[in-house]
Image (cartoon, rainbow, N blue to C red; front, side):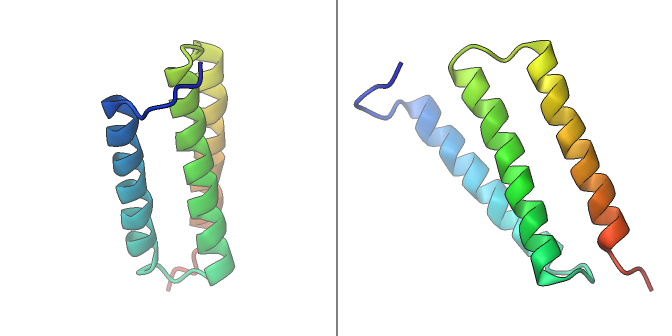
Length: 87
């Protein structure tokens, strides 16, 4: 249900996710990876986190939904490791 005000839970969660995205961008900047690959990695991670949080807020976070997002995060991590040019 859409509410006209922001609950403390939503406010706190949005701040935590924003800080997580910023810190992830900072950490990825130290890896030898291209700009497009880094941007895509951060975007997919934000998609996964916001999808899980949205399903949690609307009380539809079932094990199957969590499994699908976990697989997506796993493939993101795998592709990130394959894109990094280790020297």
